[in-house]
Amino acid sequence: MLLVVVITIFVYSVRDQAEQLAVYGYPGIFFLALLTNATVFLPAPGIAVVFAMGAVFDPLLVGIAAGAGGALGELSGYLAGFSGQAVVERAELYRRLSNWVQKYGFWAILALAAIPNPTFDVAGVAAGVLKMPLPKFLLAVSIGVTCKMILFAYAGAQSMTWVLGK
Image (cartoon, rainbow, N blue to C red; front, side, top):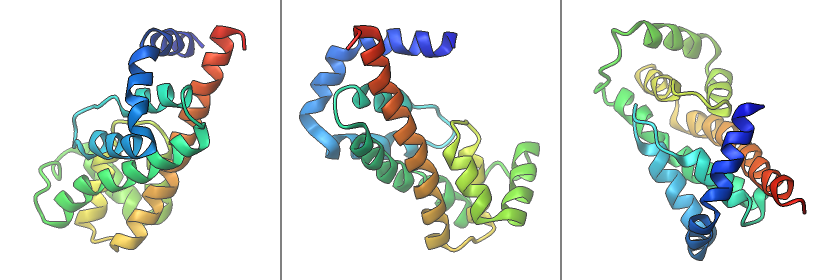
């Protein structure tokens, strides 16, 4: 609950900057999500932007635009693994996620993409190393990321009505 209050106060304080980003509309949200999800192992504030944009635009469309961009951005980890350039193969987290992706495939990727977590890049690398078919990976990531982004966009929209009393 405290986290929601802190995020809401943050979004309210940067609402003017979020509205400035609004001039780019849904394509801007798509592109920003693509960029923030293309970073491998470095956190980027994509979810915070989606949360803020949900208060400015239609939250469903924000979630869909961010989900599509985010899914394409997640290809960076998959391609690193697919090309054999993965540097995480010796890490314990990689071994655990790789086993999970190997055992559950599509469903493991979908679940990991749907929850906010910093480990998804490792799961994407594992999917690439395991040569999961690209269409299967993209479908799972698209569903998971889009669901997550829609929830964050609606949370942003609701937080503004809660703060402003509208």
